[in-house]
Length: 432
Image (tube, helix red, strand yellow):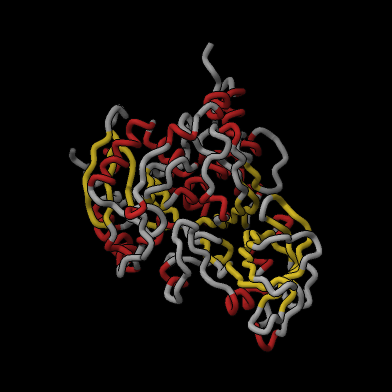
């Protein structure tokens, strides 16, 4: 008996996505120029049986992207989320802001003032013997109380930020972390951030504050690259997915079915979604810059589908298994992405906001984009599984990754880039 989509999705083992990544191949420093990174071009054949590889510089990407394409960028901005703290015993601790509690938008939570009772955040707190009621001190003179409200799990707690001197630290909580916090570098970059990383670990088009990790595919996009793309006729639009620390978590429990996907906040202007609909209806290719842009677009599809089915959907909420259950239950073909997007726009004419836990693994059917720009990801990660799903299986995934390793590519957040997709859409089809 053939297993359904859900059973196949849950059945993937983490070890299927293990590869040897030497530590010296992990990029721990940014390049002097954003667009000077290497760019691996992986063109999948029309019959999807083979992938051919060529090598460029990211500064050449405009030559590859079709002139009528629409780029979708994640414009989330990394916040200064690491806060040094001191326990009441005098011991050192560190607070990593993850997200505002209660599903609130980061853009709203960061505007709270010192007297607000809503300065409650879910945080990862480093330090021993912490419990509800424990108070940490933040600031050069231990100016601000941070009280642990309740444990969430492991080293994650909900904390309440106490009042602060607005003349000293600013009027809003965003001002406070800008003054006292530092850049939340990934855990595999084992050094303290330096001052310039407030800009280097940030895309040039970052706008909406809320991420604790950068949408790294976009780090390569320099003003000159964006200008060259615009001269060619390539248009851009933005979505916002605020990236959480869970993006670095390996697949837990050995199998995908045992893994709990982290939830991340999505905020999308309906006007931007209209641009995507117009491009799709015009037959123009959509280029997703980064896995977060992919997860946003695909999550929007599933939310729109619920509306088309007459199900209530006041907010965008996509669970990790929802698409696979829908595909298992579907007796008829699913609607196009444009139909789903238009249903969303009609329901939410100004903006769409909510949460997504969407987990994309091999067997998933993509519906909303055509080309993917992405970095090289950690072994046994959900991001690696997403890339495998887009390429059409592990064989093509390992062709790409083996080639990158053999050609001295730099990996992970500060590493080199790739553009993946069907050869017919790449202006300069790659050769073997």
